[in-house]
Image (cartoon, rainbow, N blue to C red; front, side, top):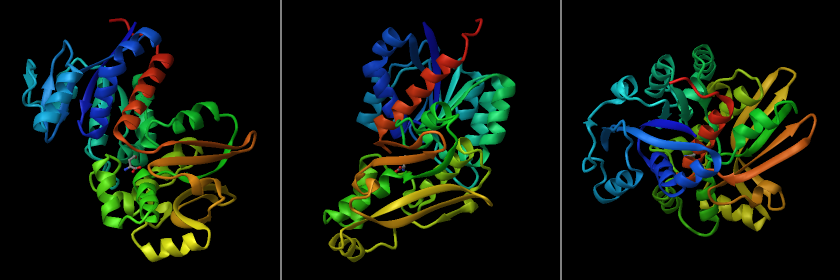
Length: 348
Ligand code: HSE
């Protein structure tokens, strides 16, 4: 049995989704797949911090957050450690980095991840900031230290986009990626088409756990642009930055625009695209009026989709959840299973 002892930095929607999966499916995952997942530490700026080397009960963590909004009522031998102390002093062997996304500096996640790699911890993160901005440096550091970085949840939540592109299509030569990679905006556009106002649809997306802590990252297209950078650099061997992505969000779209498109048999979608050209990679995120018979036009709500155009296989399309607490929590489980497959157990 392989055991992974997790330190969670951040206990928002994704951390809680992961705790719920461990609570409900943890025994089955251990029995069927031989990987036991235990949370030993949680450090959250607002909800509080706990460390128990014998493991924290996911049920107790979830019940506490649900009843009081924080972790203060959960018994643990150590508490109030900040992220740095949690990484330095806990016995975790995996850092699960879930702090808030900052697409300008990547901090504090870049520092958390660097510190954990130096200590020899594997990393699993759904945080787009450090991966869009610092992946080459962080992955080189991880290679030097012999640890893995799992990034499945940075794009399309638990829908295995990165695994498909990195592992299964590695030899197929991806020349173009096109898709819908933000759940919040796709949800808003679908709801607006059903007559909901923009503000009400955004509030619903926040309530359902799709939106970023600062939803302007979603509606202005920054979140999708971050995912474009990650896919271009990790899956297409490019070396682009956010500034290279031509970006436009959905805030300029009016109910009238949506109604006009509908009456013309079209539908607005926030389309992300990356294409290899003779002069390098061309990347963009922009609202696009698709004919309703276009395959991406029927991808609605928080569902996302990407089409990989490859030399050897032609087009390969993946459709699945793009956001949501359980869907993104699942990405972390996927990455842990991936680490278990790649890495030989360490001598203790
Ligand atoms: N806010 C993101 C979205 C979450 O709506 O797609 C998943 O990355």
